[in-house]
Picture (cartoon, rainbow, N blue to C red):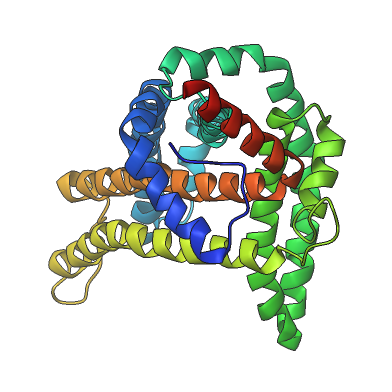
Length: 320
């Protein structure tokens, strides 16, 4: 069984993230699919059907030279587009809640010593923490997200003087770590939202005892490396539909006259189905990033390391 509350270095974060799925992957994804599978399928279905129609109308009107055709389509189908937009937003919100918090609850139970975790256990965690989840969502929407946009926007402005490129490389992984630490701490401690937000920021730069060197670079580096690994894998799945898309453009217009809509017909359906599959793959692979952040959070909780080690020693003594 993996030990969670312990100090880890940069390389151990990455290796233990892979080891986690070797040890618990089958059980983890079984519960993940049971809780999240239907939502992911619905999200992909809405994407494939809804956005295929939308892109077909946009591209079709442009290729035909009818500049006002899409505007007319939009006006005639305004009610349907609003309903689809609201449905997509609600599905995406629910999907994100489960996608982000599932590893939080799963790792919390493993950290508490539970070896075999059932889907009902995770489902009960969602139900028992419904109030906290609502508060977390509100805090993320109205506090964390606006502040993040301000920081990211400022970094992009500084790109004009070159230093912004370096800042962006620092800001994105750091913001991701702050958000995931916030979620882990909010459900693994007795702190409120603002206290957990404060802890998630402070813990990026120093340990609670203040005597050890800053963990910032190993947290940042671990997130960067895992992100690159996932980006390379998901790029393979997005590259395939893009090749089909450009291939359909070339075959439909061998003489250079692009008058046919590449999203229409079987080729368009196939393109969006492949893109839908790439979305599903990215959702599954993102779990490694969340687990990696969870290991970093447990590394930061030095106040619990000794307690867990003493509890494990007592357990070994009782077994003997």
